[in-house]
Image (cartoon, rainbow, N blue to C red):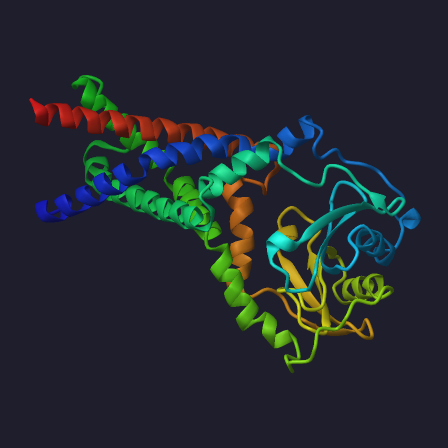
Length: 363
């Protein structure tokens, strides 16, 4: 490698690492409990799996009506399903296009059409997730975290470029124990970086993708979802009790093997003015992140259109479980946690090497 090329990659590695290290430490430390968020929530009783008789549950329409009775004058906007208990969550507001601040949230237990407890969130993992995804800085913080992920990827790639000539000459994973301590630290730093290369790139890039959820989803709504609707400018079809259950049943009949994740009522951002948008998910750990929207006529309850997610939405939906290691059960989570700890060590050795370099120049 030419000296000029070496200096170029060295600057990229140094500055991308320095700019991101502190925030990467925060992300690694907060990411560790999030890998085990299901186990932590279960231990705290937040998501205890319950058993119930499906035939004994009240209809979705009755559950929706029960939620609206507690918020007179409002209309339903979304209906979502809990996975571990027979509870539906009704989001309502003064209008279908109400601002988020004006929306109400009512979890309804379908075993009796009564309010359910525990639907508000706010537990330990919710707190850590908010810190991890946007540093409590809102949308701007989320994009900043995405930039940190991109810098991490740049630091990883540039580190490989710098390490490659040495690895070819001395061999991969060589630690020169007879050399000065700083040289040994450098070799350990390079070794850790090489071992975690693929994982670091995967986690860094999927983390960056996750921060782009708002613009990607907005584009999908304009590009693909709009093609499923008539879009003729008619007034929002008002809610009529008796069609929600029919809409969900007809949607599931068009996509066997899938189950409902949520329903967007007419006029909601993820629907049209005259459709129920029923979003179905797969039944396996992998496919449950892939959603299929089914547009159901709000007057008749019959299916108008079905369309799988486009490639960019599939990428977005698959990025989150890959980022946290949710695909392979506890074994994969343990591997993810180990690699997370190793990455913390990588960042620590990088800081040590940089401080040593500063002290050397100071002398």
